[in-house]
Length: 280
Length: 195
Image (cartoon, each protein chain N blue to C red):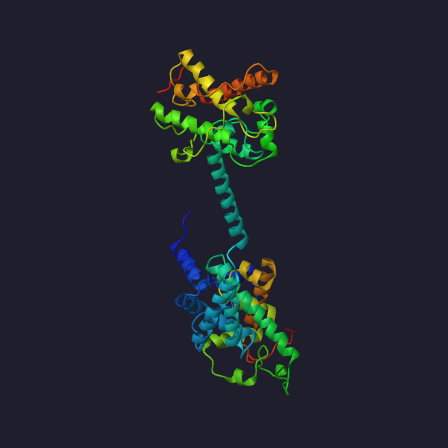
C-alpha cells in the first residue's frame, strides 16, 4: 500500500500534538488518535511495585553517597595551605617587621614578608640581599642559617614599642606591628660593646639597627619636621641614650655605619612621608 | 536571571532524592514510572516492570552527580531504560529455550508471547503494542520516545545515538507507515520488512 504523503514538519507537529484537526492531512486522523492513546492515560499496574522499587532506589542512592568522598584532595590541600599560612603569619609577627625592614629574614621569608607587609602599607625590601647584606653579613648569615627570629630584631621592635607607648601616639593601622608588652618582657638586650659588633658570620641585624633608628630620630628632631602619624615610631630620647654607637674608626665599621645609616634612614624614610605631613 | 519556580522545585526535589529522601524518591517515581513502563512494554513485553525497576536503580546510583532540569532527567532516564531493554534482548537471544518460535506468528509483537497479545490491556498499552507491531524497531523507538516519553527530536537523537535529521526521517517514515496500515482489515498482520 502506498504511504500517504506527509512532510517532516507536519510529522513533527503531529507527534508534538500541535496539529489541529483542520490541518490534519487526509488519512492521518486515526494515526493522531493512536498517538494520543499511546501518550495519554495511565498504564494499568504501572505503580504496583512502588514500595519495593522506591526502597531499591533509596538503597542505591545512599550507597552511592557512601562510596564517593567529597573532594578529599581539595580538602587536604586546603588544610595544608591553611597550616602553612598560619605558621608563616606567626613567624612574621614574632620575628618582627623590623627584621623584614632590614632585609634580614631568612631567604624566601623576606619576599613573603615584603608581600604581606605591603598590604599593611609597610614597605620592606623584597629580597634578603639588601644594602645590609655585604657589610653586615647579617643577611648573609640569615641566608645560610634560618634559625628563627633574631634577638637583635626582637629587641629593636620591643624598644620601638616602648617608645611608641610612651609617646602617647594613637595606634596607627599603617604602623609597624609591634610585639605585645608581655612578649617584650622576656626579650633581652642583645648586648653592647664593640666586641658584639656584627661580623659577616653573625646572624641577624645587629645593634646597628637600634643605633640607626636613634640616629634617625635625632636627625628628625633636629630638622624641625612636625611629627607624622604615618612615620616610623622612633625610640624615645631616653632609650637612645643607652644605645651605644655601633662602631667607629675601622674601615669595615665605617662602611657598615654609612650603610646602616643610609639603610635605616631610608627605611624610616619609607615610613615617613614628606615634610608636608605631620606627626600628631 | 532567576530560574522559574518549576525548575527550582525540580532542583530541590532531585537534591532531596539524591540524599535518600523517601518522599522525593516517590515523587520522581510516580511522575515518570507510567511512561517508563509503557515505553519498555513496547520494546520488551512482559519484562517492562522489572526493567523499569532496574532503570530506576541505575538512575539513583548517579543521582548525586546529576545536573540538569526536568527534561534532562527524563532524557537520561529513558536512555538508561532503552539500554536496559537492548541488553535484555541480547541476553534473551543468547539463552532462548522456547520450543516454538512465536516470532513468526501473526499478531506477535516485538518478541512477546500469545498470551500477552490476547490479554485485555488498557487503551494506552494497546496503542503502544500497535505501534511496535506495525513499525520496524528503529521507527517504533523514535515514535514512542516522542509520544510516550514526551522528548523532543534533539533529545530523542541523544537517546538513540542518531542525528536529529535521522530522527526526523525515522519519525516521518513511521507515521506514513502507520497511516498506510491503520484501518486495514488485517491490522495485526506482521510487516514483511525486517525490524
